[in-house]
Image (cartoon, rainbow, N blue to C red; front, side, top):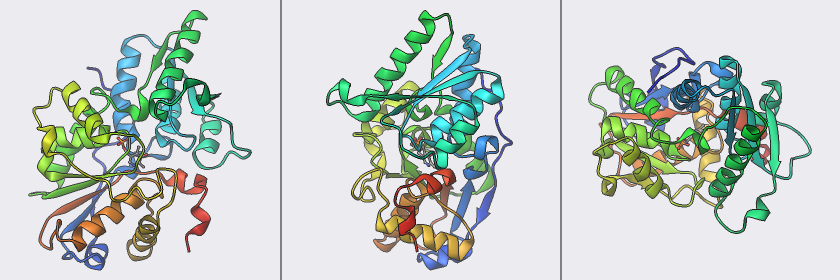
Length: 318
Ligand SMILES: *Cc1c(COP(=O)(O)O)cnc(C)c1O
């Protein structure tokens, strides 16, 4: 598999002693893996996966990248940025109708010069959104092919056996930067981040906090592990589903509290959809003793800042 370079590695690993104490850990217990600082296109975890999926697309001779997601998708924004960096066109397929104002990620998508197609997902019946969007992305690629282009479809969230290699690499960085890691805590969206971390660290050390982005994250992470030829046992996957609240697009009150705490106590800005939920999940796990003082814990800051400016409920933060 061919990897291209889209950022500067490794990303920093920073201690967070004040946040550690505030959530009930010892000062040395908590470390932040700064994957929000992956330089391309305002950064975030999707850059690691795109190094592999865009590498594969270039190896196939693609001239246009097609992908999908929610309108505030960080993955879609970073696919547009990776396309720009690689000198390719990009087409993003979002569920319509378009919002009246382009904020957050949508504003950056426009700036990055991508083409946005608003799909009518109602026409596809009652399969889940990720499946519906994947179908529309394939159709879009087919249209492009018929018109003489060479499209490559980048999977939803960049999550496939190929894309998740990026997080196997991240797991190696984590092992080099922090000795004796007990827990790595990450948000789970499309599943590739957790799958790659599990492939590199084993299922016992990775704690996924589900955001509700897909209907069966356990099955999806297991599937990606299979695609990676990982021997990790899917029965041992630890996916916490207590932070979904009223659903993926909403800002839950524990996530809002976690965002506020990280900002005020460490100057660390998290995002409302993923890392806010992930920190809320860690806080709850410490409170119930699943993560204990003395456990060396790495929290994956996976990016998503543009989503804070595009989230419909951000104004409720106070
Ligand atoms: C997509 C995303 C995640 C989740 O990663 P997956 O590999 O899709 O599970 C976490 N944090 C941010 C900021 C993201 O954009």
